[in-house]
Every structure is written in C-alpha cells, then in structure tokens.
Length: 415
Image 1 (cartoon, rainbow, N blue to C red):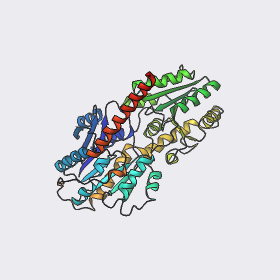
Image 2: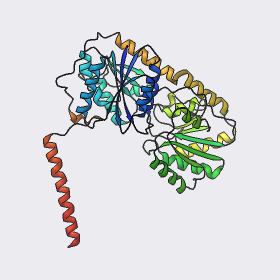
Image 3: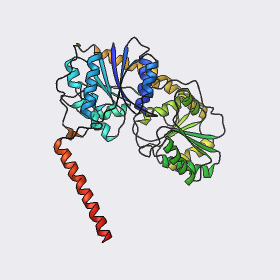
Image 4: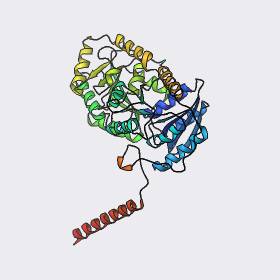
C-alpha cells in the first residue's frame, strides 16, 4: 500500500506533531507499505532529512503563505504519487482536497491533537461538512474523540491513536534522595503555565533545599527569558534551562531526573510526559481534560488540581514515605509499554489504513482544473487566503488612515 503523509517541518523545532511524524513514519517504513512524506518547511527541514536518510521518499517545498498555493502543491504531488491513502494530518489546506480524493477513491485522514477551541472547530468542520468531510479522523485521546462524536459524524471513522513514543534504554534512579524535576517541551506561557510552575518550585525550595528543576526544549532567547524568571524568584541556583535535545540525548537527559512536570491548561496527549514515563520518571501533571487516560493518580503518577498548593502538599506526602515511588515508576513504564509505545501506534495506523482501503475502489487522481475552497468566512485555523482586490484597497486605506492620524498626533504635540 502506498501512503502519503503530510507534516510541517521547521528549523530547531520540538513540537509534538512534527516529532510524532518523524517517529511514526520511521516505524511505518519498517512495514511492507511505501511511505511518501509531503513536507512544507519553514527555514529548514531537519526531520525530513532524517527520514530521507532512512530511505523514505520526501516531497519537500518551502511553505507558502497562502492556502490556494499550498492546495495546488499538494494536488500536484498527490497526482504524481497516486497514493492509496492520504493523511492530511494537521494541514487545513491539504484537507480541502477531500472531495477530489473521494472522487478518485483515495481515503483521506486528518488528525485531531488538542482541545484548543480553534483546533476543535476545524476538526468538527472536517468531520461533518457534506463536501469536505474526511473518511477518518485520528484523535490522540478518548476525550477528543468523545467531544467530536457529540456532533453529526455519521459515516465518519474515528480512531483513538495516541502519539506513540519509543521505548527507552535509559531509566531514572528512584532511590535517589533528591527531588529532581524536569520539564520538557516548548517554552511558552499558554498553555504550559511555566511561570506558575517556577513559582511552585520556588515555594517548595523554601521548604526543602534538596530540590532542582531542569527545563528542556527552549529556543536560545526563551532559555534566557526563563533563566531570568528563575533568577527573579531567587531559584537560579537550582534551575537550569536548556535548548531542545533529540533522540538518545533527550532520553538520557530525562533519565537523570525523578519527576516530570506539566502544569498545562490543556493538552491533547502530551508526548513529553509519555517520553518521561518510558524512562521511569513519575509524572506530576495538571488536571486537564483527557490526562486521566494516561496518568492514574497514585498508581503511575500524580494529578494535581490547585497547582501550587497541591504540588507542595504532594511532595510533603512523598517525603513522609506515603508512596512507593519505585512501584509507581515501574507502573509508568508498564503503561507506555502496553498502550503508548510507537510500536502500538504504528499497528493501529496500519489497521486503519487497511480498513479504509478495503472500502474504496481506487481510480486515477487527476488535478482539478479549478479547486473549489469553502467560504473563507469560516476562518478555519490554518486557512490563510489570498486577499481580493477590494480587500487590498481597504487594507491600504486603513494603513493610510493610521499614518494620517499618527502625523496629526505628532503635529498636535509639536504645536
């Protein structure tokens, strides 16, 4: 079977969808299916190069700003490949090819990765629209699937396939007396609430000096920003901020610690937590929707509600030997082995491919003379249309008005 799989690539980027594509496509390539990666990149395409080194065919193009140009590129590549399955993944523009792929008997699949309202509305559109509806949507958690199924999703296949993670050969030492925490992921306030996390660690440090925190995954400017935040809180001696790490180095870094933190407002199914659990780290996570599928409080990790107070009280209880940490860490590893490994994810994807392929009679995909897009008034996430002539005129008039107002303010101040 010939699979075409879309993903975006970036220079020095550690985001979930890109890392998941790298891991999943590497694993799928080990099967008897032919994998084609359709990659639009910004600045650089390091992950696509890794796939090329594995012998995976990558169709690579610098990312165009406008939806119309992206759709045309996807259509041209699909016409060259003639795939049996097309995974539009998180791409809105690629998803707009649904009616033309349906005509050619090529199933189209998109992924739903976060409960963010913009992503939710996009998933609902491609789950329910009579013209642009997809054949299947893969959700990374049962919570996202249940939310999607509240809408009229007749004849849509929904599958729960978490972003699988590689099993680890590096493991945390839970016999250490110190309380070594790690955060792994993007350095951003929303939804990660990193300042709140730093404040919680600072409050704990005031009670127990045997505490440390390492933050991994920031750009250079972000590393500087959060190092300064730690300094402002007086915990610069116990907080270390690092740029992103990949592959074996990443797992080695994680395994140096005992606990992995995530204070997010919302997530889909956090890959960093799964990576940490695979190394025997104990997750301490905020109580966002869907996290209880992965983390079972007191069994393979901990879920906290009132972040600062619950975090502090939890560590006090752990200090009092109220929990068997070695057992909890072992359960964390077992959870990943059983349900959240990249092997388990690849098996589910292959089953979905075969299921969809058996329901279709494939024909030749021909590039449409004119690709009709839905109304841009929908304002779907990731949909950036070319401005009309009228919109250009309005924009220029708006800019001129702002300039005149600014000039008049300056004149008024000078007079």
